Length: 201
Image 1 (tube, rainbow, N blue to C red):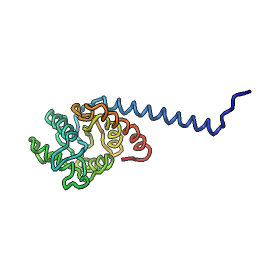
Image 2 (cartoon, rainbow, N blue to C red):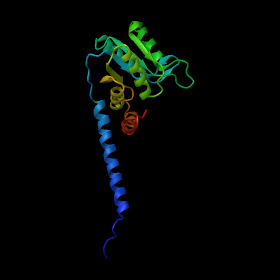
Image 3 (cartoon, rainbow, N blue to C red):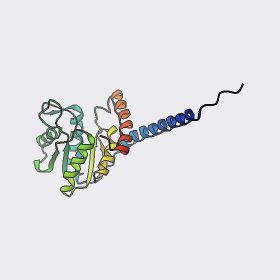
Image 4 (cartoon, rainbow, N blue to C red):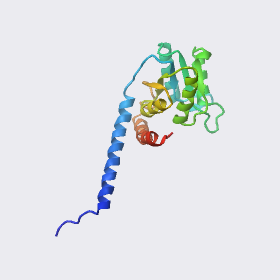
């Protein structure tokens, strides 16, 4: 007897599943590679992606981003800082305002620290921050966040009219914890295609 022949629809479904799997694997590699590259260039501002804050104090993840941003600022890579992040549930301060206060308390003049306080997602934070920057004649941004975030942030920044330079924080608390790192990398491998195709968050 001849082996059963797969129905054309099943063959098409198998091919589609294989294609989706290959695309996901390719995206996963892109996320890892993008986070492994630091592209420091002189810029107009250092754009810092927000993260959780606790009663006016940055979380360890946010603090690591801020400390690296301050290191870049002190190294004269950019004259201004742009903090992002809105108000979380049950919070009274935005992530951006907490970040701004943190920078000022460490010697950064208040007139060079800007805050985007509306963002409740990466997409909204970058879009609102970019609008502020463009209004001030700023286009080039060193983008500071954790490594897993870089690929999607660069796409969001480009779409918002900025020229982004990836600056993943080298002292990331997430990168230091392999389980957490891969959880976020996997999440980004799904979020990036959604952002590329649909806009995403």
